[in-house]
Length: 312
Image 1 (cartoon, rainbow, N blue to C red):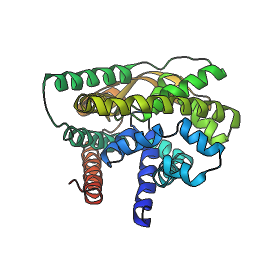
Image 2 (image 1 turned 135 degrees about the horizontal axis):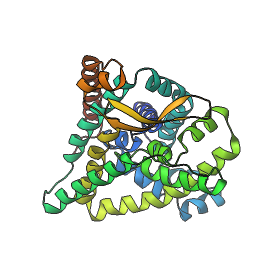
Image 3 (image 1 turned 90 degrees about the horizontal axis):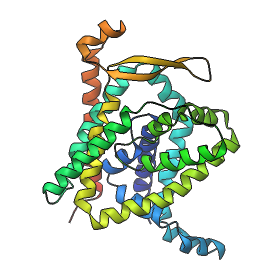
Image 4 (image 1 turned 30 degrees about the horizontal axis):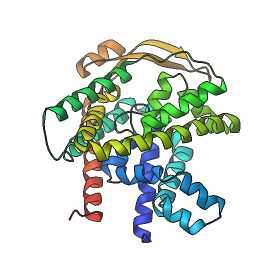
């Protein structure tokens, strides 16, 4: 049984994961990785299997709880749910009002996170370098994709949930951005805010199926090809920096379902070009400070995780 301190810490890790997953371009998997719970999370998800259903069918709650690592999953999922339900509006507001500062924070967070994750590679060889390059290329391609017009039918909502949840558990690939590419980010956010039960249920079912299937694959890869898998995941994070670069120029826009003008296609620009391209203040000094804050937050989480989970 975990002590109260560990349960509270897991709850706040869940809040951090949920906050990250709300932002298009930032992954909750990144937070799980840098806080030292990534493989534990994968194993807990994998444990939701036929054996778990048997325990549930026989109403063997104690055995079920132990089988799925309930002491780990419950506080973590509670934190994620708290964050998604309460912070979605706050984070979207901050992104709208202070985009450079928020993106700078996440840029710093992801840079230091990638460096910390690379420490997990035990043996460096050509295969690891190829894996890192492949991860960078895949993430860059995904984050450069243009959002598409897609149907609002139930089957597509199910598929969007299955694919997005797979991205959410991969460090560096944002489930929210996958939804943006699929043209479903605004739709899902509004469904949560307006509590549209049918849409949420269909999307949630897709998430459950995708999560249970994909977690098994990633967990298997960790066991069989640990260094290569770490290389690909760290590459994902490095490649995702393309999306969270703070200074962007919108070259195409669209009107969302609420009548607001939103950027559809953006290109990265240098800070000294930003004012000339957009007419807006680049806030360069503030960007540096917020990026440094992202660095420090990750370093602090890494220290805390190391203190609570000392390696033998």
